[in-house]
Length: 464
Image (cartoon, rainbow, N blue to C red; front, side, top):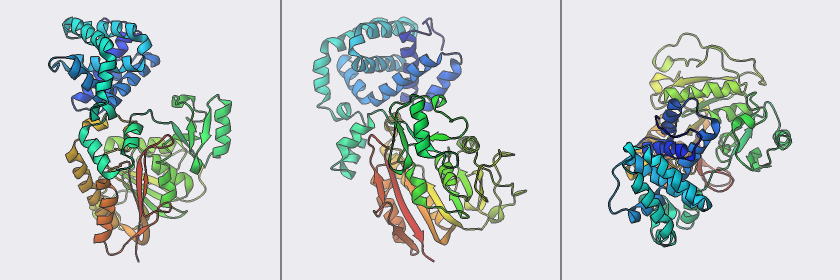
């Protein structure tokens, strides 16, 4: 990112955040856009990196609102996407910190001067100062426009209205909030109550939630968490932590985590029981993160099964050549294979599983406050595409589940097409499928709130 801007300036942070936002507008996810930025700026101070990231996230949460303002402030759409993104970042900052309006406008204009040979410097100055003059009028008008008011695409709002007629407004409001930072204590290493005390000693106020999750009062870098590097704790949403308990794996069971990356739920299962666990993921790059996370937690890999064979006699291969000394309680271990779980001929050895976790690819509509780019990158047709993939995964995994075994279907979605409707259709076409209560209900839908994100769970048993 070659500019004449001082790297410690707000103008530089606005410019960098605009680069990331423009990347999302071009169809890339925010993580990819930020990763490219960090590669270009390897020596960027952590504080400035954090500022760019915060600005990008805030802008994408308010993307619909900022776009509405620009449509009222400009006679015609701005074709220069980098400058448009800069204006969106500046508008989000002005709304968040009105007391700093003079500085924000000045620094945004300076950032505009570093783009497109400075051709849009005057335009940026005029648009932002016009917003400040007309702010009350524009904010009142935004309340009359669904996309500007709720800061989600119109089709998304309509779908939530249909699926959640009583809750859609609360869901949309939650999707615009900052998410909580929640921890999962490694029960093989520490008790949750003891770790809570350690957090207090470290000056990190926190609260114990139902089920043993710990929510920090304020998010912090993981490096500040006591014992993180030693594997005492992981960052995982409280809603995601429900999966391991609902799956109900016990010592000695054979368990499949079919869409496992990056390995949070995989690790939680192994922390709670000595199982023989196979973790699969179709994304080879993301699959590499599974053993990294498990080794950090001191969770022992299974012994190498030897040279792999083919088709149904195939044995899975350990993802790392060795594992650290075990802190486990007995037999068991894990293996990771980068493969699409639907291609059973490529990975299944013919031995059935006692428990299967199917944390399937989905719209991620329940976690948009963590990934605000998702709501602007998704299209209505994507939901039907996800539902087809989810149905294919269920059909494939049901074949490798042992009679009497249980499969936990999980999404981080709020859309019925990916959740209750899909599971009901699957159960109807499988004569040996029984739906079991999940936390007292036929299925469990968690809506996003202050303690957790949005998740869906359905527990299915294969009748003998």
